[in-house]
Length: 204
Image (cartoon, rainbow, N blue to C red; front, side, top):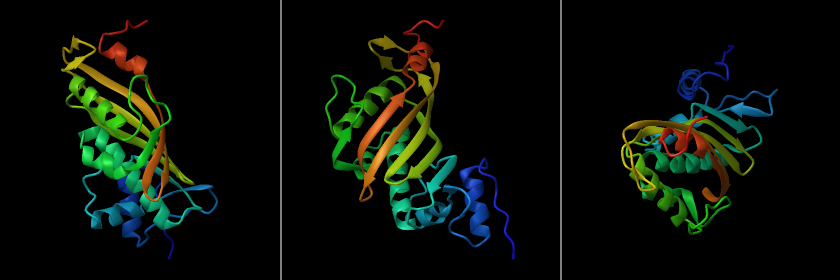
């Protein structure tokens, strides 16, 4: 029996559904150095993880074991979901106790408390903050999450009260994961776009 899989551009949900219907837990494309994987959909459902954000596109290194891929994807999804709902328990479950932020902003403490503080400050400015994972790539012991943040500036940021301005900007995080926990993170946010959208920096 021959099976046709969706193209990479298909959504994570559609890819997962197609593979489950075909009786597969992973889609292996031997001619590519990386593969699209949909196994996590059904597996995480069984683990009660349906409330976690799902990447629109998920690419996984074909050299990883299924167990390692699942653990790393789960840690990344927990941490990315923390950014969309502010649940500190999710952040603590995703981060190692010796977590290090390798792009630590000035004045912020190192360790697990760093993202907790950042999230509180961000949500104080944008209470309806939403984080979408547009792409997730899992290679070796790294997970790269390409994120899109959106919401409305109705709170207070740097002493300025929002007027409901729409916020929509991207960010990219690189997680190093060990034993199912994020131990290091390198991240870059499009802060200029955010500051322009909330009216703190003039648009050119």
